[in-house]
Length: 219
Image (cartoon, rainbow, N blue to C red; front, side):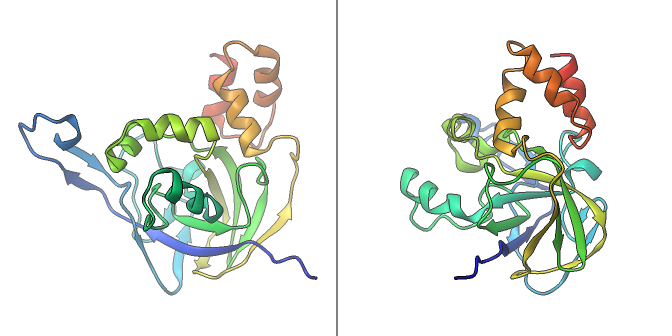
């Protein structure tokens, strides 16, 4: 039986929004600005060096060429729906651009280069969830759950711009760092202050985003 290739099950884009109410007592209702809410799009979408057409990140800690796209495993959603007791939780709930089947943080590696449609992307770093994910779910506990599972997703830089669309296959071209899965990278990064040898080894990985390499050298 032929092995089925990973594919894009959905593509999501979204612009920055101002949400919340001035003077709200509940912190979850207080004003905030975010681009974590994204909508699915159909048909070809242009992927440039800085991201998908119609998509934005809201602050300096997100976006840029090293975080042009955020991918998330479609295979995580059945687990989340059960654990969160949200049977109708839609793909895209974690703010991702690409929902990809048959790939996850333990099968994707830093430096992996994939062809998607007309474009080529390269995995640059794991996604480490911030407080906005808690606001999106109205539950700060989701951040710790994501951290414990290592299910934050992964960012890519764009090596070749081009059109991408839902149902494109995600074809692996090269894997220069099979030892550095996204899951292992995430684990080493978060214990960098106590396991300096592993942190130094990871910092030497030239395919890892420069910002992460610098933080590994200076925890």
